[in-house]
Amino acid sequence: MNYSKHFRVEPGAHVRLANVDPGFTATHASKDDAADEMAHDIDELCRLQYLLYAGNEHSLLIVLQGLDASGKDGTVSHVFRGLNPQGARVHSFKEPSREEAAHDFLWRAHIPAPQRGEIVIFNRSHYEDVLIVRVHNLVPESVWSKRYELINAFEKDLAEAGTTILKFYLHMSPQEQLKRFKARLDDPSRRWKISEADYTERAYFADYLTAYTAALERTSTPDAPWFIIPSDHKWFRNLAISRIVVETLDGLNMKLPRTTVDLDAIRRKLSQDSQGRTPT
Image: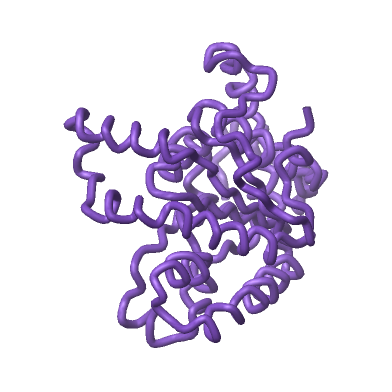
């Protein structure tokens, strides 16, 4: 199965989230059934990150979006756990600070965008400005409706500068969301994540799906495609995302850079040192 093709939202496509099964697991019956593939993808991701970092020609931006409890934090913890922190960062988007709110809405997305050789993961993102802003009428429609094209232009600029962009919408059912909220209540180690907003926002579940549908349809582009990831099963969510990231990075055909020093001269110096000569 080609995960990149199967879950990709093609530019101009009509999206019906109601027809996407959030419990889909492809040919896998269980977490154990997918364990070997997941382990392979994690190893491959580490290998490919090394090439990305060493080559210093490409960068990768990963956008994680989804409703509360859909698994954005879990994806970071499980899919990207093996990345070398020298070349990887996670940036979380929360309520805009005073400084951020004083600029245009994309200002806070420009700053943490990846530099060459780097992987950056946006946990939530600039898309909050066409999602929560739309659902809660924080700005007029005349304002947020113009932001889709501004986002497309921003992402096109990043792509032209060498950034590969992958955007994942973690698609979860309302039943699974409630199940996860209850699990947090029963787990002392995760109760800190509970907020009143988690439950009040459930009343807007359908409104969020409408907002996500518009974002998926209007901002899935060749430069920055969206992928709708079934997320009721955490293990399959992780597998699908890891596979798409690996397939994408592998498609860049990255190579280690050529050596820029005289290796024979260095070998001679090392040989001399090993024979007891004092380095000069």
